Length: 333
Image (cartoon, rainbow, N blue to C red):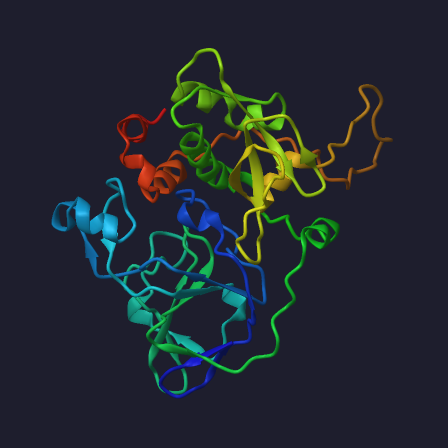
């Protein structure tokens, strides 16, 4: 629970901390997004966020590396760390600062800094974002809020509970390319510059073509497959494994495969694909009847990994300074 640092007023009743969603790092331009987080939850961004910003040529490679950036990736934030992220519906006791409510076309994008003020003392405490190309989220300014005594957080579920309650699922929908791009970067680093062969099925459908374009061809390719709770382990050199959505811990295989951390929602879609209804090839509904069942969840077009999320993830990994990997970072696909 968090309150205003100026007057102590309660700003949110969200009490359950979760891992920062990996899809926070990217978005789809000119597309309305759902809330980033579920109601009642909050996440903390350990990276600097917001102004002031400094360009790459002002910072230099050494200083950028000290701040966790190991390849060029636009301007760097020198704002505060520890920004608290909430679902917009979990905020209370604030008003919109109208002169800071600018956006692109469908909402507010936070370009002018904190745009929500405490109704008790008028201190700017948060930034709401809901424009196209933005996840719907409220960002609490860590320098303007304080932690308040709160009820106990929800207990951390083990993997069995997560699978049984469908807690691994999230409304990724067309946005699954973002965690896929982050997972792809982890695979490329784990492969160490050697060829990679994706196991036939969902893994090959999602990453196979891009891995073929990025990695060298040849014999002795490292096999990439899935492993995880309720799924087991297969013979592979690299395995996509889920990241716990509450704690951020990576599921560890017991065999000798190298674990590749993957967003839990994306992993669950790969390991346990949604049921796809089989429609009859002949026949139809009676005259005058209207269908009320949803269509099978077939995507309108193949979804591949996000290039932006791939580069963002690589830029935060020291291995990108190796010549072979920096060449991939610069070239892309």
